[in-house]
Amino acid sequence: MSYDTQPKASHFIDGAYVEDTSGVPIPVIFPATGKQIATVYAATPAIVDQALASAHRAQRQWAAMSGTERGRILRRAADMMRDRNHDLSVLETYDTGKPYQETIAVDATSGADALEYFGGLAGSLTGEHIQLGEDWVYTRREPLGVCVGIGAWNYPTQIACWKGAPALACGNAMVFKPSEMTPLCALKVAEILHEAGLPAGIYNVVQGLGEVGASLVTDPRVAKVSLTGSVPTGKKVYAAAAAQMKHVTMELGGKSPLIIFDDADLDNAVGGAILANFYSSGQVCSNGTRVFVHEGIKEAFLKRLTERLSNAVIGDPMDEATNFGPMVSEKQMKIVLDYIEKGENEGARLVTGGKRLNRDGFYLQPTVFADVTDDMIIAREEIFGPVMAVLDFSSEEEAITRANATEFGLSAGVFTRDLSRGHRVIAQLEAGSCFINSYNDAPVEAPFGGTKMSGVGRENSKAAINHYSQLKSVYVRMGDVEAPY
Ligand code: NDP
Image (tube, rainbow, N blue to C red; front, side, top):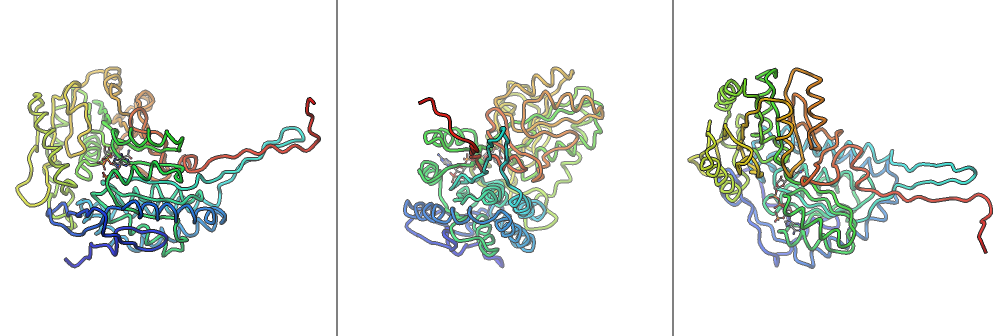
């Protein structure tokens, strides 16, 4: 292999790579071959303590710098990420199995966007002045302190930056734990931030499984936890954080609806449904996996969808022509195969796909089920793989009611040429990140996050600033104090 995937060490703490081989070894597997490409070691309690202590020690000085100075470092790191996009994308592809064609376009670049955007905002963070007659109140926007970021495996570079950039812009320090499935990319983010001038201790990465995450969440030095993960993990982490009244951001799973009306441009709607289900081999939290298609256009939609899916280039993710890669792990592939079997057993019509590919690695075919009903497991549970469920509907009201009949509320989309219907329907859908005649765009300027069981808080945009800072209000009396006695 020409590219060295073995990191210098497992952890990045206090501005340097740190190794401790007494931790549990974590093999890093390239999903396209099933071969091991690196080993890292889970953080021992001593490593976790070292990371938290260095973050705690460094944070006050970082917060004492001006926002403009902090922002300059983040923007420099953004430029470096763009300069190194090729290498970072190759690493992201090794870590996740996602095709290079995808990673070169969306991973390090999206991370760089976050560093640039929050770097730009850092100098503009202010409190306000509230005049009350002669007296007045001023507010100070203060950092929270040490923030913990815990990542999922589908977007390791992006998640490390989406959490780190706003946290650091606001003057916090971060300890980030990647998913044990994809431990490589966050280390590069830490390396680049420090090369860009970040003081030691402000952005640390520790490896480990859930128990390392849990030990970070419960440490009293930690003020905030931001998790990207599944709903069951979210519940545990939220509860643990609540015990010490910590701030939280929860970016969790979904089973989002995409409603396609009979007046929609068919090719755009099919394109939207493809983006909503098959990008990153379907391993995207905001995916629109319940595709409600008006009964009048259902067969035309399925025909066009099948034609277009037959053009997917499935293969070596390092090949620039490949646009559909393997699942992240054997475990995830088996979970998805199990759901496909359930769909078939429940009587859904398998329109295309449904099989594992006969080759090394964890490859599945893009899969579409039609005639799916609301009660089927494949319409209710998050599959997190390339499996689209197509459901029929006849009226707008019915589609909205059924779209909302889920515990999740991350995303929702509508395809229609009728603009007032588009806005009217989106307004009634219970979801945090919505799309009209599009799907899965996630620019850093727009808030991203869920409602209901899909999470609390928002990442990206100015909204994220509120989740990584707190307001102190200061009442200033200009005259004498009048006390009753
Ligand atoms: P998990 O919920 O299994 O894990 C998420 C992270 O939490 C991992 O780093 C995991 O560590 C860690 N973790 C597990 N248990 C604990 C615990 N008790 N305390 C602290 N940390 C813990 O999710 P996956 O990694 O499997 O990712 C897939 C899920 O993520 C999907 O459900 C998807 O919807 C969701 N997701 C949500 C996104 C969003 O923005 N809303 C974006 C991307 C994914 P380890 O893996 O090492 O066990």
